[in-house]
Image (cartoon, rainbow, N blue to C red; front, side, top):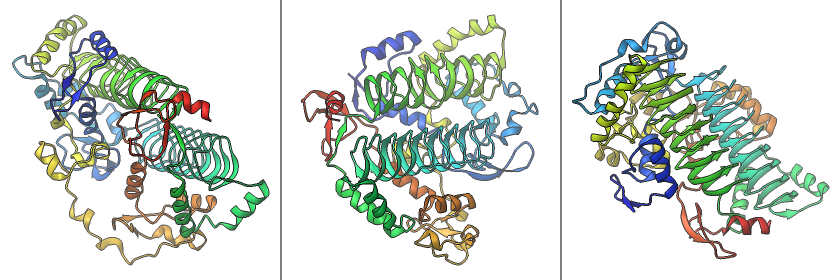
Length: 549
Protein backbone atom coordinates (compact mmCIF):
# COMPACT_ATOMS: atom_id res chain seq x y z
CA UNK A 1 0.00 0.00 0.00
CA UNK A 2 1.36 3.43 -1.00
CA UNK A 3 0.23 6.95 -0.09
CA UNK A 4 -0.44 9.57 -2.78
CA UNK A 5 1.89 12.57 -2.66
CA UNK A 6 -0.86 14.90 -3.85
CA UNK A 7 -4.10 13.87 -2.14
CA UNK A 8 -2.66 11.60 0.62
CA UNK A 9 -5.07 8.80 -0.30
CA UNK A 10 -3.78 5.22 0.03
CA UNK A 11 -3.51 3.19 -3.17
CA UNK A 12 -2.44 -0.33 -4.07
CA UNK A 13 0.23 -1.39 -6.52
CA UNK A 14 -0.98 -4.40 -8.49
CA UNK A 15 1.38 -7.30 -9.31
CA UNK A 16 0.92 -6.79 -13.06
CA UNK A 17 1.64 -3.11 -12.53
CA UNK A 18 5.04 -3.83 -10.98
CA UNK A 19 5.85 -6.17 -13.85
CA UNK A 20 5.16 -3.43 -16.39
CA UNK A 21 7.23 -0.89 -14.45
CA UNK A 22 10.16 -3.29 -14.46
CA UNK A 23 9.76 -3.86 -18.20
CA UNK A 24 9.80 -0.15 -19.07
CA UNK A 25 12.34 0.74 -16.35
CA UNK A 26 10.39 3.26 -14.26
CA UNK A 27 9.99 3.52 -10.48
CA UNK A 28 6.72 2.91 -8.66
CA UNK A 29 4.38 5.91 -8.99
CA UNK A 30 4.21 8.40 -6.12
CA UNK A 31 0.68 9.60 -6.93
CA UNK A 32 -2.57 7.61 -6.98
CA UNK A 33 -4.15 6.73 -10.35
CA UNK A 34 -6.72 9.56 -10.11
CA UNK A 35 -4.10 12.23 -9.41
CA UNK A 36 -1.91 10.89 -12.22
CA UNK A 37 -4.88 11.08 -14.60
CA UNK A 38 -5.74 14.59 -13.43
CA UNK A 39 -2.15 15.71 -14.08
CA UNK A 40 -2.38 14.53 -17.68
CA UNK A 41 -5.82 15.99 -18.32
CA UNK A 42 -4.78 19.55 -17.44
CA UNK A 43 -2.93 19.52 -20.78
CA UNK A 44 -6.09 18.85 -22.81
CA UNK A 45 -8.36 21.70 -23.85
CA UNK A 46 -11.09 20.10 -25.93
CA UNK A 47 -14.00 22.51 -25.93
CA UNK A 48 -12.68 26.09 -25.88
CA UNK A 49 -11.86 27.72 -29.22
CA UNK A 50 -10.60 31.28 -29.66
CA UNK A 51 -10.31 33.87 -32.42
CA UNK A 52 -6.71 35.01 -32.84
CA UNK A 53 -4.08 35.55 -35.53
CA UNK A 54 -1.50 33.13 -36.89
CA UNK A 55 1.89 34.25 -35.57
CA UNK A 56 3.55 33.23 -38.84
CA UNK A 57 1.26 34.86 -41.40
CA UNK A 58 -0.98 37.27 -39.49
CA UNK A 59 -4.05 35.47 -40.83
CA UNK A 60 -7.19 35.33 -38.65
CA UNK A 61 -7.63 31.80 -37.33
CA UNK A 62 -9.57 29.62 -34.90
CA UNK A 63 -7.33 28.11 -32.22
CA UNK A 64 -7.45 26.12 -29.01
CA UNK A 65 -4.98 28.66 -27.58
CA UNK A 66 -5.97 32.17 -26.57
CA UNK A 67 -3.75 35.18 -27.20
CA UNK A 68 -2.10 34.99 -23.76
CA UNK A 69 -0.06 31.80 -24.31
CA UNK A 70 3.74 32.33 -24.33
CA UNK A 71 4.57 30.42 -27.53
CA UNK A 72 3.75 31.25 -31.17
CA UNK A 73 0.60 29.67 -32.60
CA UNK A 74 0.54 28.80 -36.31
CA UNK A 75 -2.44 27.96 -38.49
CA UNK A 76 -2.63 24.19 -38.93
CA UNK A 77 -1.31 24.02 -42.51
CA UNK A 78 1.39 26.61 -41.82
CA UNK A 79 2.59 24.55 -38.87
CA UNK A 80 3.02 21.55 -41.15
CA UNK A 81 4.78 23.59 -43.84
CA UNK A 82 8.54 23.90 -44.35
CA UNK A 83 8.49 27.61 -43.51
CA UNK A 84 9.98 26.93 -40.08
CA UNK A 85 12.12 24.28 -38.42
CA UNK A 86 11.69 23.09 -34.84
CA UNK A 87 15.43 22.28 -34.67
CA UNK A 88 16.14 26.01 -34.78
CA UNK A 89 14.87 26.18 -31.19
CA UNK A 90 17.28 23.55 -29.84
CA UNK A 91 19.16 23.96 -26.56
CA UNK A 92 22.02 22.01 -24.99
CA UNK A 93 21.31 19.68 -22.05
CA UNK A 94 22.43 21.08 -18.71
CA UNK A 95 23.13 18.37 -16.14
CA UNK A 96 23.16 20.90 -13.30
CA UNK A 97 19.43 21.69 -13.71
CA UNK A 98 16.27 19.59 -13.37
CA UNK A 99 15.22 18.29 -16.78
CA UNK A 100 11.65 19.60 -16.56
CA UNK A 101 13.07 23.12 -16.12
CA UNK A 102 15.02 22.68 -19.36
CA UNK A 103 12.17 21.27 -21.44
CA UNK A 104 10.01 24.15 -20.15
CA UNK A 105 12.13 26.51 -22.31
CA UNK A 106 10.93 24.66 -25.44
CA UNK A 107 7.34 24.57 -24.20
CA UNK A 108 7.44 28.38 -24.02
CA UNK A 109 9.12 29.03 -27.38
CA UNK A 110 8.41 26.35 -30.02
CA UNK A 111 5.34 27.10 -32.22
CA UNK A 112 2.17 25.03 -31.74
CA UNK A 113 -0.50 24.19 -34.28
CA UNK A 114 -3.76 26.10 -33.83
CA UNK A 115 -5.99 23.04 -33.67
CA UNK A 116 -5.24 19.34 -33.80
CA UNK A 117 -7.00 18.12 -36.95
CA UNK A 118 -5.32 15.44 -39.06
CA UNK A 119 -6.47 14.35 -42.52
CA UNK A 120 -9.75 16.21 -42.13
CA UNK A 121 -12.00 18.21 -44.43
CA UNK A 122 -14.33 21.03 -43.37
CA UNK A 123 -13.72 20.58 -39.64
CA UNK A 124 -12.40 24.07 -38.80
CA UNK A 125 -14.56 24.36 -35.67
CA UNK A 126 -13.53 20.97 -34.27
CA UNK A 127 -10.51 19.96 -32.23
CA UNK A 128 -8.69 16.65 -31.83
CA UNK A 129 -10.09 15.38 -35.14
CA UNK A 130 -8.77 12.53 -37.26
CA UNK A 131 -9.92 11.36 -40.69
CA UNK A 132 -13.23 13.24 -40.43
CA UNK A 133 -15.21 15.47 -42.75
CA UNK A 134 -18.06 17.98 -42.55
CA UNK A 135 -18.16 18.11 -38.76
CA UNK A 136 -18.89 21.05 -36.48
CA UNK A 137 -18.06 21.42 -32.79
CA UNK A 138 -17.10 17.78 -32.31
CA UNK A 139 -14.16 17.31 -29.95
CA UNK A 140 -12.40 13.98 -30.04
CA UNK A 141 -13.69 13.48 -33.56
CA UNK A 142 -12.42 10.21 -35.11
CA UNK A 143 -13.40 8.92 -38.56
CA UNK A 144 -16.74 10.73 -38.59
CA UNK A 145 -18.83 12.36 -41.28
CA UNK A 146 -21.53 15.03 -40.97
CA UNK A 147 -21.57 15.09 -37.16
CA UNK A 148 -22.04 18.11 -34.90
CA UNK A 149 -21.92 19.00 -31.19
CA UNK A 150 -20.20 15.98 -29.73
CA UNK A 151 -17.37 14.66 -27.63
CA UNK A 152 -15.60 11.34 -28.27
CA UNK A 153 -17.69 10.41 -31.28
CA UNK A 154 -15.90 7.74 -33.30
CA UNK A 155 -16.62 6.13 -36.66
CA UNK A 156 -20.10 7.65 -36.88
CA UNK A 157 -22.23 9.55 -39.37
CA UNK A 158 -24.99 12.13 -39.03
CA UNK A 159 -24.89 12.17 -35.24
CA UNK A 160 -25.70 15.30 -33.25
CA UNK A 161 -25.27 16.09 -29.55
CA UNK A 162 -23.67 12.76 -28.71
CA UNK A 163 -21.18 11.80 -26.02
CA UNK A 164 -19.01 8.68 -26.23
CA UNK A 165 -20.83 7.28 -29.24
CA UNK A 166 -19.23 4.65 -31.48
CA UNK A 167 -20.05 3.28 -34.93
CA UNK A 168 -23.49 4.85 -35.00
CA UNK A 169 -25.61 6.74 -37.49
CA UNK A 170 -28.48 9.24 -37.33
CA UNK A 171 -28.35 9.50 -33.54
CA UNK A 172 -29.30 12.49 -31.40
CA UNK A 173 -28.65 13.15 -27.70
CA UNK A 174 -27.08 9.72 -27.21
CA UNK A 175 -24.58 8.83 -24.49
CA UNK A 176 -22.44 5.70 -24.54
CA UNK A 177 -24.26 4.13 -27.44
CA UNK A 178 -22.49 1.59 -29.64
CA UNK A 179 -23.52 0.46 -33.12
CA UNK A 180 -26.90 2.20 -33.06
CA UNK A 181 -29.01 3.72 -35.83
CA UNK A 182 -31.78 6.32 -35.68
CA UNK A 183 -31.68 6.42 -31.89
CA UNK A 184 -32.59 9.57 -29.94
CA UNK A 185 -32.42 10.68 -26.29
CA UNK A 186 -30.84 7.40 -25.18
CA UNK A 187 -27.89 6.15 -23.16
CA UNK A 188 -26.00 2.95 -22.47
CA UNK A 189 -27.41 1.13 -25.47
CA UNK A 190 -25.89 -1.37 -27.91
CA UNK A 191 -27.23 -2.34 -31.33
CA UNK A 192 -30.51 -0.45 -31.00
CA UNK A 193 -32.37 1.29 -33.81
CA UNK A 194 -35.45 3.33 -34.73
CA UNK A 195 -36.13 4.14 -31.08
CA UNK A 196 -36.25 6.97 -28.55
CA UNK A 197 -35.64 7.34 -24.82
CA UNK A 198 -33.90 4.02 -24.20
CA UNK A 199 -31.69 3.30 -21.19
CA UNK A 200 -29.64 0.12 -20.73
CA UNK A 201 -31.12 -1.58 -23.77
CA UNK A 202 -29.49 -4.04 -26.14
CA UNK A 203 -30.66 -5.24 -29.53
CA UNK A 204 -33.94 -3.30 -29.41
CA UNK A 205 -35.74 -1.66 -32.29
CA UNK A 206 -38.97 0.33 -32.60
CA UNK A 207 -39.17 1.00 -28.87
CA UNK A 208 -40.06 4.19 -27.00
CA UNK A 209 -39.27 5.11 -23.40
CA UNK A 210 -37.89 1.73 -22.32
CA UNK A 211 -35.33 0.72 -19.68
CA UNK A 212 -33.36 -2.51 -19.35
CA UNK A 213 -34.81 -4.38 -22.35
CA UNK A 214 -32.95 -6.94 -24.45
CA UNK A 215 -33.84 -7.88 -28.03
CA UNK A 216 -37.33 -6.38 -27.91
CA UNK A 217 -39.44 -4.44 -30.36
CA UNK A 218 -42.72 -2.50 -30.32
CA UNK A 219 -42.51 -1.60 -26.61
CA UNK A 220 -43.67 1.69 -25.11
CA UNK A 221 -42.54 2.47 -21.55
CA UNK A 222 -41.58 -1.21 -21.20
CA UNK A 223 -45.05 -2.44 -22.20
CA UNK A 224 -45.36 -4.69 -25.28
CA UNK A 225 -47.62 -3.75 -28.18
CA UNK A 226 -48.49 -5.24 -31.53
CA UNK A 227 -46.80 -3.62 -34.47
CA UNK A 228 -50.04 -1.91 -35.46
CA UNK A 229 -50.72 -0.61 -31.93
CA UNK A 230 -47.17 0.65 -31.61
CA UNK A 231 -47.26 2.52 -34.91
CA UNK A 232 -50.64 4.05 -34.09
CA UNK A 233 -49.59 5.26 -30.62
CA UNK A 234 -46.28 6.61 -31.92
CA UNK A 235 -48.05 8.50 -34.69
CA UNK A 236 -50.11 10.25 -32.01
CA UNK A 237 -46.93 11.54 -30.37
CA UNK A 238 -45.43 14.72 -31.75
CA UNK A 239 -41.72 14.13 -31.07
CA UNK A 240 -40.92 17.46 -32.68
CA UNK A 241 -42.51 19.28 -29.74
CA UNK A 242 -40.50 20.18 -26.63
CA UNK A 243 -43.45 19.33 -24.36
CA UNK A 244 -43.53 15.74 -25.70
CA UNK A 245 -39.80 15.41 -25.01
CA UNK A 246 -40.17 16.68 -21.45
CA UNK A 247 -43.08 14.29 -20.82
CA UNK A 248 -41.17 11.27 -22.12
CA UNK A 249 -38.10 12.10 -20.02
CA UNK A 250 -40.18 12.20 -16.85
CA UNK A 251 -41.89 8.90 -17.65
CA UNK A 252 -38.54 7.19 -18.26
CA UNK A 253 -37.23 8.46 -14.91
CA UNK A 254 -39.96 6.40 -13.23
CA UNK A 255 -38.53 3.23 -14.81
CA UNK A 256 -34.83 3.89 -14.21
CA UNK A 257 -33.47 2.02 -11.21
CA UNK A 258 -35.77 -0.97 -11.51
CA UNK A 259 -33.63 -2.73 -14.12
CA UNK A 260 -30.94 -5.38 -13.68
CA UNK A 261 -27.55 -4.14 -14.84
CA UNK A 262 -24.15 -5.72 -15.36
CA UNK A 263 -21.29 -4.56 -13.15
CA UNK A 264 -19.74 -2.79 -16.15
CA UNK A 265 -20.97 -1.45 -19.48
CA UNK A 266 -19.59 -3.27 -22.51
CA UNK A 267 -19.26 -6.69 -24.07
CA UNK A 268 -16.87 -9.42 -25.17
CA UNK A 269 -14.38 -8.87 -22.36
CA UNK A 270 -12.24 -11.12 -20.16
CA UNK A 271 -10.70 -10.29 -16.78
CA UNK A 272 -11.52 -6.58 -16.76
CA UNK A 273 -12.14 -3.96 -14.09
CA UNK A 274 -13.54 -0.59 -15.10
CA UNK A 275 -16.41 0.58 -17.29
CA UNK A 276 -17.40 0.99 -20.93
CA UNK A 277 -15.09 -1.78 -22.09
CA UNK A 278 -15.50 -3.47 -25.47
CA UNK A 279 -13.47 -6.42 -26.83
CA UNK A 280 -10.89 -6.09 -24.06
CA UNK A 281 -8.94 -8.45 -21.84
CA UNK A 282 -6.77 -8.07 -18.74
CA UNK A 283 -7.71 -4.48 -17.91
CA UNK A 284 -7.23 -2.80 -14.52
CA UNK A 285 -9.19 0.41 -13.83
CA UNK A 286 -9.83 1.09 -17.49
CA UNK A 287 -12.56 3.35 -18.83
CA UNK A 288 -13.89 3.72 -22.36
CA UNK A 289 -11.54 1.20 -23.94
CA UNK A 290 -11.98 -0.69 -27.18
CA UNK A 291 -9.87 -3.62 -28.38
CA UNK A 292 -7.30 -3.17 -25.60
CA UNK A 293 -5.23 -5.81 -23.83
CA UNK A 294 -3.05 -5.91 -20.71
CA UNK A 295 -3.56 -2.23 -19.85
CA UNK A 296 -3.78 -0.36 -16.56
CA UNK A 297 -5.36 2.98 -15.65
CA UNK A 298 -6.18 3.92 -19.24
CA UNK A 299 -9.14 5.90 -20.54
CA UNK A 300 -10.60 6.55 -23.99
CA UNK A 301 -8.25 4.33 -25.97
CA UNK A 302 -8.46 1.91 -28.87
CA UNK A 303 -6.08 -0.97 -29.67
CA UNK A 304 -3.59 -0.38 -26.85
CA UNK A 305 -1.48 -3.22 -25.52
CA UNK A 306 0.80 -3.43 -22.47
CA UNK A 307 0.28 0.24 -21.61
CA UNK A 308 -0.43 2.15 -18.42
CA UNK A 309 -1.67 5.64 -17.57
CA UNK A 310 -2.63 6.73 -21.08
CA UNK A 311 -5.57 8.85 -22.25
CA UNK A 312 -7.31 9.84 -25.46
CA UNK A 313 -6.17 7.92 -28.50
CA UNK A 314 -8.04 6.35 -31.39
CA UNK A 315 -4.99 4.51 -32.76
CA UNK A 316 -2.87 1.62 -31.56
CA UNK A 317 0.05 1.76 -29.12
CA UNK A 318 2.23 -0.69 -27.25
CA UNK A 319 4.48 -0.42 -24.19
CA UNK A 320 3.58 3.23 -23.57
CA UNK A 321 3.38 4.88 -20.16
CA UNK A 322 2.12 8.24 -18.86
CA UNK A 323 1.05 9.50 -22.30
CA UNK A 324 -1.72 11.74 -23.59
CA UNK A 325 -3.08 11.66 -27.16
CA UNK A 326 -0.64 9.30 -28.82
CA UNK A 327 -1.29 6.92 -31.69
CA UNK A 328 0.53 4.32 -33.77
CA UNK A 329 3.30 4.46 -31.17
CA UNK A 330 5.70 2.00 -29.62
CA UNK A 331 7.60 2.34 -26.36
CA UNK A 332 6.94 5.99 -25.51
CA UNK A 333 6.90 7.60 -22.07
CA UNK A 334 5.73 10.94 -20.73
CA UNK A 335 4.64 12.07 -24.19
CA UNK A 336 1.87 14.41 -25.29
CA UNK A 337 0.37 14.51 -28.81
CA UNK A 338 3.02 12.34 -30.43
CA UNK A 339 1.68 10.29 -33.33
CA UNK A 340 2.23 8.70 -36.74
CA UNK A 341 4.46 5.74 -35.94
CA UNK A 342 6.59 7.26 -33.21
CA UNK A 343 8.87 4.97 -31.20
CA UNK A 344 11.24 5.29 -28.26
CA UNK A 345 10.24 8.86 -27.39
CA UNK A 346 10.69 10.28 -23.90
CA UNK A 347 9.02 13.46 -22.69
CA UNK A 348 8.24 14.75 -26.16
CA UNK A 349 5.37 17.08 -27.09
CA UNK A 350 3.71 17.56 -30.48
CA UNK A 351 6.17 15.32 -32.32
CA UNK A 352 5.20 13.26 -35.35
CA UNK A 353 6.74 10.30 -37.21
CA UNK A 354 9.80 10.56 -34.97
CA UNK A 355 11.96 8.02 -33.15
CA UNK A 356 14.66 8.03 -30.48
CA UNK A 357 14.07 11.56 -29.21
CA UNK A 358 14.20 12.98 -25.68
CA UNK A 359 12.52 16.15 -24.41
CA UNK A 360 11.65 17.53 -27.85
CA UNK A 361 8.79 19.77 -29.01
CA UNK A 362 7.33 20.17 -32.50
CA UNK A 363 9.53 17.73 -34.43
CA UNK A 364 8.49 16.05 -37.67
CA UNK A 365 10.21 12.92 -39.01
CA UNK A 366 13.18 13.35 -36.69
CA UNK A 367 15.54 10.94 -34.97
CA UNK A 368 18.28 11.11 -32.34
CA UNK A 369 17.30 14.55 -31.02
CA UNK A 370 17.54 15.90 -27.47
CA UNK A 371 15.85 19.18 -26.51
CA UNK A 372 15.39 19.86 -30.25
CA UNK A 373 19.08 19.47 -31.06
CA UNK A 374 20.29 16.92 -33.58
CA UNK A 375 22.84 14.30 -32.53
CA UNK A 376 24.41 11.24 -34.10
CA UNK A 377 23.16 7.82 -33.05
CA UNK A 378 26.28 7.30 -30.93
CA UNK A 379 26.00 10.70 -29.25
CA UNK A 380 22.31 10.16 -28.50
CA UNK A 381 22.87 6.71 -27.00
CA UNK A 382 25.67 8.13 -24.85
CA UNK A 383 23.41 10.91 -23.52
CA UNK A 384 20.38 8.68 -22.87
CA UNK A 385 21.45 6.97 -19.59
CA UNK A 386 22.79 10.28 -18.25
CA UNK A 387 19.47 12.02 -18.90
CA UNK A 388 17.53 9.21 -17.23
CA UNK A 389 19.80 9.41 -14.19
CA UNK A 390 19.37 13.20 -14.04
CA UNK A 391 15.58 12.81 -13.99
CA UNK A 392 15.70 9.99 -11.45
CA UNK A 393 17.72 12.14 -9.02
CA UNK A 394 15.10 14.90 -9.30
CA UNK A 395 12.16 12.49 -8.94
CA UNK A 396 11.01 13.33 -12.47
CA UNK A 397 11.56 10.01 -14.24
CA UNK A 398 8.23 8.21 -14.72
CA UNK A 399 6.14 11.32 -14.03
CA UNK A 400 4.11 13.21 -16.62
CA UNK A 401 4.92 16.86 -17.35
CA UNK A 402 4.26 19.11 -14.32
CA UNK A 403 1.06 21.17 -14.22
CA UNK A 404 3.05 24.40 -14.67
CA UNK A 405 3.87 23.43 -18.28
CA UNK A 406 0.21 23.30 -19.31
CA UNK A 407 -0.69 26.38 -21.38
CA UNK A 408 -4.31 26.24 -20.19
CA UNK A 409 -6.26 27.39 -17.20
CA UNK A 410 -7.56 24.45 -15.19
CA UNK A 411 -11.16 25.35 -16.06
CA UNK A 412 -10.32 25.30 -19.80
CA UNK A 413 -9.35 21.65 -19.64
CA UNK A 414 -11.12 18.31 -19.59
CA UNK A 415 -9.75 17.83 -16.07
CA UNK A 416 -12.52 20.16 -14.87
CA UNK A 417 -15.13 17.66 -16.13
CA UNK A 418 -13.68 14.69 -14.27
CA UNK A 419 -12.06 16.45 -11.30
CA UNK A 420 -14.06 19.68 -10.81
CA UNK A 421 -12.44 22.44 -8.75
CA UNK A 422 -13.45 25.96 -7.83
CA UNK A 423 -11.20 28.83 -8.80
CA UNK A 424 -10.04 29.10 -5.19
CA UNK A 425 -9.15 25.40 -5.01
CA UNK A 426 -7.20 25.50 -8.27
CA UNK A 427 -5.29 28.67 -7.38
CA UNK A 428 -4.46 27.27 -3.93
CA UNK A 429 -2.69 24.39 -5.68
CA UNK A 430 -0.73 26.80 -7.83
CA UNK A 431 -2.67 25.97 -11.00
CA UNK A 432 -3.76 28.51 -13.58
CA UNK A 433 -7.37 29.65 -13.97
CA UNK A 434 -8.86 31.16 -17.14
CA UNK A 435 -10.92 34.29 -16.54
CA UNK A 436 -13.73 35.15 -18.90
CA UNK A 437 -13.14 38.29 -20.94
CA UNK A 438 -15.68 41.16 -20.91
CA UNK A 439 -16.60 40.18 -24.49
CA UNK A 440 -17.48 36.66 -23.35
CA UNK A 441 -19.65 37.81 -20.44
CA UNK A 442 -21.36 40.71 -22.21
CA UNK A 443 -24.79 40.09 -23.71
CA UNK A 444 -25.03 43.43 -25.51
CA UNK A 445 -24.28 42.02 -28.94
CA UNK A 446 -27.11 39.48 -28.87
CA UNK A 447 -29.62 41.83 -30.43
CA UNK A 448 -33.33 41.40 -29.74
CA UNK A 449 -34.50 38.31 -27.86
CA UNK A 450 -35.65 35.51 -30.14
CA UNK A 451 -38.19 33.01 -28.89
CA UNK A 452 -37.19 29.43 -29.72
CA UNK A 453 -40.25 27.65 -31.16
CA UNK A 454 -41.60 24.79 -29.05
CA UNK A 455 -42.46 22.80 -32.17
CA UNK A 456 -40.03 22.09 -35.01
CA UNK A 457 -42.88 22.71 -37.49
CA UNK A 458 -42.90 26.34 -36.35
CA UNK A 459 -39.18 26.89 -36.91
CA UNK A 460 -38.49 28.95 -40.03
CA UNK A 461 -35.21 29.19 -41.91
CA UNK A 462 -34.71 32.66 -40.39
CA UNK A 463 -33.85 31.06 -37.01
CA UNK A 464 -30.37 30.36 -38.43
CA UNK A 465 -29.76 34.10 -38.76
CA UNK A 466 -30.59 34.74 -35.10
CA UNK A 467 -28.41 34.59 -32.02
CA UNK A 468 -30.27 32.62 -29.35
CA UNK A 469 -29.87 32.79 -25.60
CA UNK A 470 -29.35 29.63 -23.51
CA UNK A 471 -32.24 29.25 -21.08
CA UNK A 472 -29.84 27.96 -18.38
CA UNK A 473 -26.66 30.02 -18.66
CA UNK A 474 -27.82 32.98 -20.75
CA UNK A 475 -24.88 32.44 -23.11
CA UNK A 476 -25.39 32.94 -26.86
CA UNK A 477 -25.69 30.06 -29.29
CA UNK A 478 -26.79 29.51 -32.87
CA UNK A 479 -28.63 27.00 -35.01
CA UNK A 480 -26.70 26.30 -38.21
CA UNK A 481 -28.57 25.43 -41.44
CA UNK A 482 -27.55 21.76 -41.63
CA UNK A 483 -28.52 21.38 -37.98
CA UNK A 484 -32.00 22.75 -38.68
CA UNK A 485 -32.33 20.33 -41.60
CA UNK A 486 -31.37 17.45 -39.29
CA UNK A 487 -34.04 18.37 -36.71
CA UNK A 488 -36.68 18.60 -39.42
CA UNK A 489 -35.67 15.25 -40.92
CA UNK A 490 -35.64 13.51 -37.51
CA UNK A 491 -38.78 15.34 -36.25
CA UNK A 492 -36.99 16.75 -33.20
CA UNK A 493 -37.45 20.13 -31.47
CA UNK A 494 -34.76 22.80 -31.49
CA UNK A 495 -32.42 22.79 -28.48
CA UNK A 496 -33.12 25.53 -25.94
CA UNK A 497 -29.69 25.41 -24.32
CA UNK A 498 -26.21 26.14 -25.62
CA UNK A 499 -23.80 23.35 -26.52
CA UNK A 500 -21.81 23.74 -23.28
CA UNK A 501 -24.89 23.25 -21.10
CA UNK A 502 -26.12 20.32 -23.16
CA UNK A 503 -22.69 18.75 -22.90
CA UNK A 504 -22.57 19.30 -19.13
CA UNK A 505 -25.92 17.56 -18.73
CA UNK A 506 -24.72 14.60 -20.78
CA UNK A 507 -21.57 14.22 -18.68
CA UNK A 508 -23.71 14.20 -15.52
CA UNK A 509 -25.63 11.13 -16.74
CA UNK A 510 -22.52 8.95 -17.04
CA UNK A 511 -21.33 6.69 -14.25
CA UNK A 512 -18.29 8.19 -12.46
CA UNK A 513 -14.81 6.87 -13.13
CA UNK A 514 -14.62 5.27 -9.74
CA UNK A 515 -14.88 1.63 -8.71
CA UNK A 516 -16.73 0.48 -5.61
CA UNK A 517 -16.24 -2.97 -4.13
CA UNK A 518 -19.64 -4.64 -3.93
CA UNK A 519 -21.13 -8.11 -3.89
CA UNK A 520 -23.20 -9.41 -6.79
CA UNK A 521 -26.85 -8.98 -5.81
CA UNK A 522 -27.64 -12.50 -7.04
CA UNK A 523 -24.73 -14.83 -6.20
CA UNK A 524 -22.91 -12.70 -3.63
CA UNK A 525 -19.55 -12.88 -5.44
CA UNK A 526 -17.26 -9.86 -4.80
CA UNK A 527 -16.96 -7.49 -7.74
CA UNK A 528 -15.91 -3.95 -8.65
CA UNK A 529 -18.35 -1.61 -10.30
CA UNK A 530 -18.99 2.05 -11.10
CA UNK A 531 -22.46 1.68 -9.56
CA UNK A 532 -22.25 3.17 -6.06
CA UNK A 533 -23.82 1.05 -3.28
CA UNK A 534 -26.65 3.55 -2.82
CA UNK A 535 -27.74 3.36 -6.48
CA UNK A 536 -31.21 1.83 -7.05
CA UNK A 537 -30.25 -0.56 -9.89
CA UNK A 538 -29.90 -4.29 -9.24
CA UNK A 539 -26.24 -4.96 -10.04
CA UNK A 540 -25.10 -8.44 -11.08
CA UNK A 541 -21.68 -9.84 -11.85
CA UNK A 542 -21.20 -10.59 -15.53
CA UNK A 543 -21.86 -14.33 -15.17
CA UNK A 544 -25.18 -13.84 -13.36
CA UNK A 545 -26.20 -11.07 -15.71
CA UNK A 546 -25.67 -13.23 -18.79
CA UNK A 547 -27.67 -16.04 -17.21
CA UNK A 548 -30.49 -13.63 -16.45
CA UNK A 549 -30.78 -12.12 -19.90
